Amino acid sequence: MSASLSWARFLAVLLKEFVQMRRDRLTFAMIVGIPILQLALFGYAINTDPKALPTVVVVQDASPFTRSLLAALQNTGYFKIVDQFAGEAQADRALQRGDAQFAIIIPPDFSRRMERGERPILLVAADATDPAATGNALAALEHIGQQGLDHDLIGPLAALRPGQTPFEMAWHCLGRCIGCLIEASFRSATIIRFWSPRITFPKMQLVF
Image 1 (cartoon, rainbow, N blue to C red):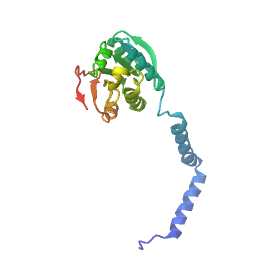
Image 2 (image 1 turned 180 degrees about the horizontal axis):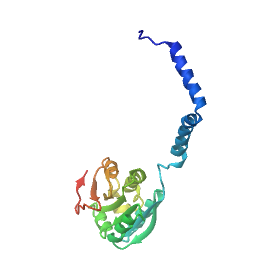
Image 3 (image 1 turned 135 degrees about the vertical axis):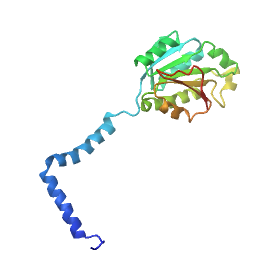
Image 4 (image 1 turned 45 degrees about the vertical axis):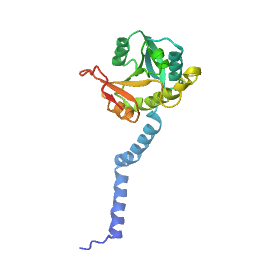
């Protein structure tokens, strides 16, 4: 038997398949319809860059720095502040209920420590069960850390503008946080704290 390709046989099989598809209208409809459906879903229906994600804030330091930070947060378009709480427990419950995608916790000594150049920690709690929805928002947070306070860091505080951000961000991931870990692993000076319904690590675990 010859191992060479016979174009006559190839064309005969190809013609047979086209004849078979004409007889089987359902198979032909699936061959044509499924790719068109996938194109419509991935091109229009599925949003891989969601905006206005519900965000709650815990403000324990009412200062001009805090107001500028929250304004810059909303100006990114990724965050929509829906509520403000007095304690972290209320923000955690909002995340667990699914009422919020993010929780921003500003500590009570945030402004004072930043003015001293001590780089306070800003806690960002994220519902990372949907990494596709949180990835771009986390990238926008990094931009806020670099440029969100430029208008406030003037005069004696201008020395805090060049180089690294004047504060650190701690990611507190709710649920399966592999996506959050991958996203944060590309950022320097980042602290990650993990939380899950079964396992709690009360201290900061990883520093990059």
